[in-house]
Length: 328
Ligand code: AQP
Image 1 (cartoon, helix red, strand yellow):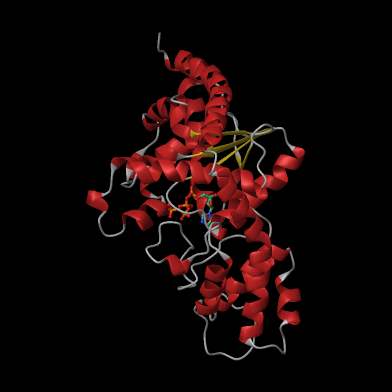
Image 2 (spheres, helix red, strand yellow):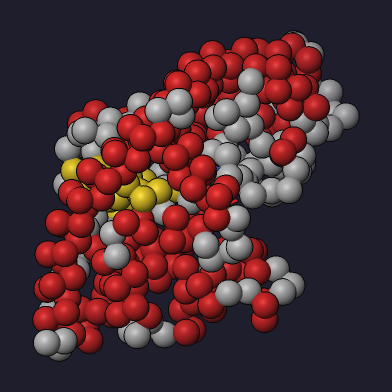
């Protein structure tokens, strides 16, 4: 079985990325040998990036993967731009994907906002590159957060469109899978907005590189409401429900059990327990990231070696695709 997923090196990895994606990857890696975890830097440049900061972010993202438990010997871990077949396949897919399908993608609407005309063509065709990432390796399963579900569905549609266009059964359908307990972690400042690496407010997220005092401060200052008691109601109490969700995702406990545990407790007791739980899991990861970043040459060597492994698999697919398309 082949498993493919990735994260953009667009800033500090958040607990949203960790709980929604990486934690699930670590679990899957325990039983599966065919895992490919990419640092999707070609996706990152769909919005402007400072070149020096991007280079740093690629290395920190790799360090975060390894520190969280990804084994770069067992799984293939590399940065996307090192394997040119991603963009070659994306171009072919661009030529078979109807514009109408891309117009339905909600992430483009969210990210382009009111400035749609000024957004890059790359941001618009981002989901086509993502389909190429997945199908280049004939991935069976794609473990991502719930926000990426629509893009995985589009990858299935593109696989079908390719097969129909060339009258083959070449690509099979990749399956979207997400963490059972975590669907979407929301911003600590606004419970209706997704927690994001690129949110202008650092207080809206917890980064894997945050120190214990910063984690504590961010949770204490996290927006809540003035309603008495701790209970789950995403409509009326999005912020409190988000904190309960984060608690559930870190501990694996059910929402019902958490609410029961806090029935007669105060908001500050709930927040303190949450802080302790987050720190217990994040502190060792942060310490490993710092250690790994002291050996950037080693990290670069890992990226190089793994890109070679990925390149071999990718080249086989692209040769077959070139032939099906009619390229000599
Ligand atoms: N808030 C979240 N809750 C659960 N899962 C999340 N993911 C992202 N945010 C949350 C999952 O993390 C993986 C990597 O995402 P990405 O870097 O490719 O892009 P993204 O989804 O756009 O993530 P960010 O953090 O919001 O990045 P920016 O700010 O650069 O756009 C995916 O599996 C995603 O589902």
